[in-house]
Image 1 (cartoon, rainbow, N blue to C red):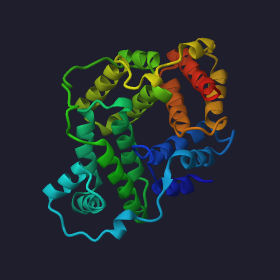
Image 2 (cartoon, rainbow, N blue to C red):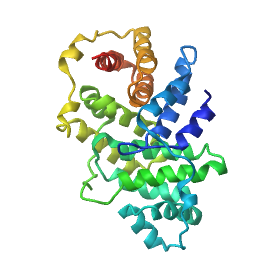
Image 3 (tube, rainbow, N blue to C red):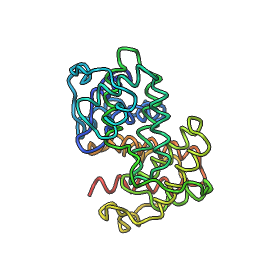
Image 4 (cartoon, rainbow, N blue to C red):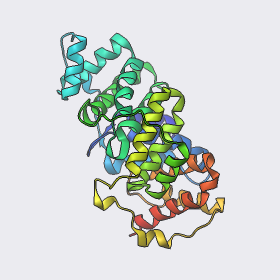
Length: 296
Protein backbone atom coordinates (compact mmCIF):
# COMPACT_ATOMS: atom_id res chain seq x y z
CA UNK A 1 0.00 0.00 0.00
CA UNK A 2 1.16 3.55 -0.74
CA UNK A 3 0.66 6.83 1.11
CA UNK A 4 -1.83 7.98 -1.54
CA UNK A 5 -3.85 4.80 -1.17
CA UNK A 6 -3.96 5.20 2.61
CA UNK A 7 -5.13 8.80 2.24
CA UNK A 8 -7.97 7.67 -0.02
CA UNK A 9 -8.98 5.03 2.50
CA UNK A 10 -8.82 7.50 5.39
CA UNK A 11 -11.01 9.99 3.55
CA UNK A 12 -13.78 7.40 3.45
CA UNK A 13 -13.34 6.12 7.03
CA UNK A 14 -15.36 7.54 9.90
CA UNK A 15 -15.74 7.00 13.63
CA UNK A 16 -17.53 4.09 15.25
CA UNK A 17 -16.99 5.41 18.79
CA UNK A 18 -16.61 9.21 18.89
CA UNK A 19 -14.23 11.19 16.65
CA UNK A 20 -12.81 10.06 13.28
CA UNK A 21 -9.11 9.24 13.73
CA UNK A 22 -8.10 7.92 10.33
CA UNK A 23 -6.75 11.12 8.78
CA UNK A 24 -4.58 11.85 11.81
CA UNK A 25 -3.29 8.28 11.62
CA UNK A 26 -2.55 8.78 7.91
CA UNK A 27 -0.24 11.69 8.73
CA UNK A 28 1.36 9.77 11.60
CA UNK A 29 2.04 6.87 9.23
CA UNK A 30 3.76 9.22 6.79
CA UNK A 31 6.01 10.52 9.56
CA UNK A 32 6.75 6.99 10.80
CA UNK A 33 7.67 5.78 7.34
CA UNK A 34 10.83 7.84 7.61
CA UNK A 35 11.91 5.68 10.55
CA UNK A 36 10.60 2.24 9.63
CA UNK A 37 10.40 2.02 5.83
CA UNK A 38 12.80 -0.95 5.90
CA UNK A 39 10.90 -2.76 8.65
CA UNK A 40 7.55 -3.05 6.92
CA UNK A 41 4.78 -1.18 5.18
CA UNK A 42 3.55 1.35 7.76
CA UNK A 43 0.70 2.43 5.46
CA UNK A 44 -0.57 -1.15 5.15
CA UNK A 45 -0.38 -1.65 8.90
CA UNK A 46 -2.29 1.59 9.45
CA UNK A 47 -4.93 0.43 6.97
CA UNK A 48 -5.33 -2.82 8.90
CA UNK A 49 -5.78 -0.87 12.14
CA UNK A 50 -8.34 1.44 10.53
CA UNK A 51 -10.31 -1.69 9.71
CA UNK A 52 -10.31 -2.57 13.42
CA UNK A 53 -12.06 0.53 14.72
CA UNK A 54 -13.39 2.76 11.95
CA UNK A 55 -16.34 2.34 9.60
CA UNK A 56 -16.17 2.61 5.82
CA UNK A 57 -18.30 5.28 4.16
CA UNK A 58 -19.50 4.45 0.67
CA UNK A 59 -19.48 7.77 -1.16
CA UNK A 60 -19.79 11.45 -0.32
CA UNK A 61 -22.54 12.03 2.22
CA UNK A 62 -22.95 15.68 1.21
CA UNK A 63 -23.77 14.70 -2.37
CA UNK A 64 -26.97 13.00 -1.18
CA UNK A 65 -28.28 16.16 0.51
CA UNK A 66 -30.31 18.80 -1.34
CA UNK A 67 -30.35 21.87 0.88
CA UNK A 68 -31.28 25.54 0.43
CA UNK A 69 -28.69 28.28 0.78
CA UNK A 70 -28.10 28.74 4.50
CA UNK A 71 -27.25 32.04 6.17
CA UNK A 72 -23.99 32.22 8.12
CA UNK A 73 -25.95 32.24 11.36
CA UNK A 74 -27.88 29.13 10.35
CA UNK A 75 -24.73 27.31 9.23
CA UNK A 76 -23.28 27.73 12.71
CA UNK A 77 -26.52 26.72 14.43
CA UNK A 78 -26.79 23.56 12.34
CA UNK A 79 -23.21 22.56 13.13
CA UNK A 80 -23.40 23.56 16.81
CA UNK A 81 -26.54 21.45 17.25
CA UNK A 82 -25.32 18.53 15.13
CA UNK A 83 -28.34 18.57 12.83
CA UNK A 84 -27.95 15.76 10.28
CA UNK A 85 -27.90 15.46 7.33
CA UNK A 86 -28.09 19.26 7.07
CA UNK A 87 -24.67 19.54 8.75
CA UNK A 88 -22.95 18.07 5.69
CA UNK A 89 -24.44 20.73 3.45
CA UNK A 90 -23.77 23.48 6.00
CA UNK A 91 -20.02 22.84 6.14
CA UNK A 92 -19.80 22.52 2.35
CA UNK A 93 -21.46 25.94 2.04
CA UNK A 94 -19.15 27.44 4.68
CA UNK A 95 -16.17 26.16 2.71
CA UNK A 96 -17.56 27.58 -0.53
CA UNK A 97 -18.19 30.96 1.10
CA UNK A 98 -15.10 31.45 3.25
CA UNK A 99 -12.58 28.66 2.55
CA UNK A 100 -11.12 26.07 4.89
CA UNK A 101 -8.86 28.46 6.79
CA UNK A 102 -11.92 30.29 8.09
CA UNK A 103 -13.35 26.99 9.34
CA UNK A 104 -10.03 26.05 10.95
CA UNK A 105 -9.61 29.48 12.57
CA UNK A 106 -13.07 29.27 14.12
CA UNK A 107 -12.60 25.83 15.63
CA UNK A 108 -8.96 26.23 16.68
CA UNK A 109 -10.01 29.27 18.69
CA UNK A 110 -12.63 27.11 20.43
CA UNK A 111 -10.17 24.26 20.96
CA UNK A 112 -7.61 26.50 22.63
CA UNK A 113 -10.23 27.62 25.15
CA UNK A 114 -11.52 24.14 25.93
CA UNK A 115 -9.94 21.41 28.01
CA UNK A 116 -11.26 18.08 26.75
CA UNK A 117 -10.26 14.65 28.09
CA UNK A 118 -7.69 13.05 25.73
CA UNK A 119 -7.53 16.35 23.75
CA UNK A 120 -8.96 14.98 20.50
CA UNK A 121 -10.57 18.38 19.95
CA UNK A 122 -7.02 19.74 19.51
CA UNK A 123 -5.02 16.94 17.91
CA UNK A 124 -7.49 15.86 15.25
CA UNK A 125 -8.23 19.46 14.29
CA UNK A 126 -4.52 20.28 13.89
CA UNK A 127 -4.08 17.15 11.79
CA UNK A 128 -7.07 17.98 9.59
CA UNK A 129 -5.59 21.39 8.86
CA UNK A 130 -2.41 19.73 7.63
CA UNK A 131 -4.23 17.12 5.55
CA UNK A 132 -6.19 19.82 3.71
CA UNK A 133 -3.00 21.16 2.12
CA UNK A 134 -2.33 17.78 0.49
CA UNK A 135 -5.71 17.27 -1.13
CA UNK A 136 -6.71 17.28 -4.77
CA UNK A 137 -9.93 19.22 -5.50
CA UNK A 138 -11.81 15.97 -6.06
CA UNK A 139 -10.94 14.81 -2.53
CA UNK A 140 -12.22 17.89 -0.74
CA UNK A 141 -15.94 16.92 -0.45
CA UNK A 142 -15.16 13.63 1.33
CA UNK A 143 -12.66 15.45 3.53
CA UNK A 144 -15.25 18.07 4.49
CA UNK A 145 -17.67 15.29 5.39
CA UNK A 146 -15.12 13.93 7.89
CA UNK A 147 -14.55 17.46 9.22
CA UNK A 148 -18.32 17.82 9.67
CA UNK A 149 -18.47 14.61 11.71
CA UNK A 150 -15.51 15.76 13.78
CA UNK A 151 -16.74 19.25 14.63
CA UNK A 152 -20.27 18.14 15.45
CA UNK A 153 -18.96 15.47 17.83
CA UNK A 154 -16.12 17.46 19.38
CA UNK A 155 -16.52 21.21 19.22
CA UNK A 156 -18.82 23.49 21.17
CA UNK A 157 -18.75 26.66 23.20
CA UNK A 158 -20.08 24.80 26.23
CA UNK A 159 -19.17 24.97 29.90
CA UNK A 160 -15.60 23.81 29.43
CA UNK A 161 -14.18 27.24 28.62
CA UNK A 162 -11.44 28.17 31.09
CA UNK A 163 -9.19 31.07 31.98
CA UNK A 164 -6.23 30.70 29.64
CA UNK A 165 -4.16 33.65 30.81
CA UNK A 166 -1.78 31.44 32.80
CA UNK A 167 1.40 30.38 30.98
CA UNK A 168 3.30 27.24 31.91
CA UNK A 169 6.86 26.44 30.84
CA UNK A 170 7.27 23.78 28.17
CA UNK A 171 9.68 21.86 30.40
CA UNK A 172 6.99 21.51 33.05
CA UNK A 173 4.46 20.26 30.48
CA UNK A 174 6.91 17.66 29.15
CA UNK A 175 7.66 16.34 32.64
CA UNK A 176 3.97 16.19 33.54
CA UNK A 177 3.10 14.27 30.36
CA UNK A 178 5.93 11.80 30.86
CA UNK A 179 4.76 11.12 34.40
CA UNK A 180 1.09 10.80 33.45
CA UNK A 181 1.11 9.84 29.78
CA UNK A 182 -2.53 8.75 29.88
CA UNK A 183 -4.56 6.20 27.96
CA UNK A 184 -2.47 4.95 25.02
CA UNK A 185 -0.10 7.86 25.61
CA UNK A 186 -2.68 10.49 24.74
CA UNK A 187 -0.92 13.24 26.69
CA UNK A 188 2.25 12.58 24.69
CA UNK A 189 0.27 12.49 21.44
CA UNK A 190 -1.30 15.84 22.35
CA UNK A 191 2.07 17.36 23.23
CA UNK A 192 3.47 16.21 19.88
CA UNK A 193 0.73 17.80 17.81
CA UNK A 194 0.81 21.08 19.71
CA UNK A 195 4.58 21.35 19.22
CA UNK A 196 4.46 20.15 15.62
CA UNK A 197 1.84 22.74 14.69
CA UNK A 198 3.15 25.63 16.79
CA UNK A 199 3.60 27.83 13.71
CA UNK A 200 -0.06 27.34 12.80
CA UNK A 201 -1.22 28.73 16.15
CA UNK A 202 -1.14 32.17 17.66
CA UNK A 203 1.02 32.55 20.75
CA UNK A 204 -2.11 32.80 22.87
CA UNK A 205 -3.55 29.60 21.40
CA UNK A 206 -0.26 27.74 21.78
CA UNK A 207 0.16 28.82 25.41
CA UNK A 208 -3.46 27.98 26.21
CA UNK A 209 -3.21 24.50 24.69
CA UNK A 210 -0.05 23.76 26.66
CA UNK A 211 -1.71 25.00 29.85
CA UNK A 212 -4.80 22.86 29.24
CA UNK A 213 -2.58 19.82 28.63
CA UNK A 214 -0.52 20.52 31.75
CA UNK A 215 -3.69 20.77 33.81
CA UNK A 216 -5.01 17.51 32.38
CA UNK A 217 -1.75 15.69 33.10
CA UNK A 218 -1.97 16.82 36.72
CA UNK A 219 -5.66 16.03 37.21
CA UNK A 220 -7.39 12.73 38.13
CA UNK A 221 -8.28 10.72 35.02
CA UNK A 222 -11.92 10.79 33.98
CA UNK A 223 -11.84 7.04 33.39
CA UNK A 224 -10.15 5.10 36.23
CA UNK A 225 -9.47 2.24 33.79
CA UNK A 226 -7.03 4.55 32.00
CA UNK A 227 -4.71 4.73 35.03
CA UNK A 228 -1.14 3.58 34.40
CA UNK A 229 -0.60 0.00 35.58
CA UNK A 230 2.32 0.56 37.93
CA UNK A 231 3.13 -3.16 38.13
CA UNK A 232 3.63 -3.33 34.36
CA UNK A 233 5.54 -0.04 34.30
CA UNK A 234 7.91 -1.38 36.97
CA UNK A 235 8.88 -4.22 34.63
CA UNK A 236 10.07 -1.79 31.94
CA UNK A 237 13.85 -1.48 31.79
CA UNK A 238 15.49 1.92 32.17
CA UNK A 239 17.82 2.49 29.25
CA UNK A 240 18.72 5.35 26.93
CA UNK A 241 19.92 2.99 24.21
CA UNK A 242 18.45 4.39 20.96
CA UNK A 243 18.41 0.97 19.30
CA UNK A 244 16.29 -0.41 22.13
CA UNK A 245 13.97 2.58 21.84
CA UNK A 246 13.37 2.09 18.12
CA UNK A 247 13.05 -1.69 18.57
CA UNK A 248 10.24 -1.09 21.04
CA UNK A 249 8.52 1.45 18.80
CA UNK A 250 8.89 -0.91 15.83
CA UNK A 251 7.21 -3.63 17.92
CA UNK A 252 4.43 -1.21 18.87
CA UNK A 253 3.75 -0.47 15.19
CA UNK A 254 4.07 -3.91 13.64
CA UNK A 255 3.77 -6.38 16.51
CA UNK A 256 0.06 -6.03 17.23
CA UNK A 257 -3.23 -5.34 15.47
CA UNK A 258 -5.21 -3.85 18.31
CA UNK A 259 -5.81 -0.11 18.13
CA UNK A 260 -5.18 2.75 15.72
CA UNK A 261 -3.41 4.59 18.55
CA UNK A 262 -0.48 2.23 18.02
CA UNK A 263 0.38 4.44 15.05
CA UNK A 264 -0.30 7.84 16.59
CA UNK A 265 1.57 6.98 19.81
CA UNK A 266 4.54 5.55 17.90
CA UNK A 267 4.70 8.76 15.86
CA UNK A 268 4.60 10.85 19.04
CA UNK A 269 7.37 8.84 20.69
CA UNK A 270 9.66 9.26 17.67
CA UNK A 271 8.93 12.99 17.47
CA UNK A 272 9.56 13.55 21.17
CA UNK A 273 12.72 11.42 21.13
CA UNK A 274 14.18 13.85 18.59
CA UNK A 275 12.91 16.96 20.37
CA UNK A 276 13.88 15.89 23.89
CA UNK A 277 16.76 13.37 23.74
CA UNK A 278 17.40 14.01 27.43
CA UNK A 279 14.16 12.10 28.13
CA UNK A 280 15.12 9.02 26.10
CA UNK A 281 14.84 6.74 29.16
CA UNK A 282 11.25 7.76 29.94
CA UNK A 283 10.15 7.58 26.30
CA UNK A 284 11.67 4.13 25.89
CA UNK A 285 9.77 3.01 29.00
CA UNK A 286 6.47 4.29 27.57
CA UNK A 287 7.04 2.35 24.35
CA UNK A 288 7.87 -0.84 26.26
CA UNK A 289 4.97 -0.30 28.66
CA UNK A 290 2.45 -0.04 25.83
CA UNK A 291 3.79 -3.19 24.20
CA UNK A 292 3.57 -5.10 27.49
CA UNK A 293 0.03 -3.79 28.01
CA UNK A 294 -1.02 -5.03 24.55
CA UNK A 295 0.31 -8.47 25.44
CA UNK A 296 -1.78 -8.73 28.62
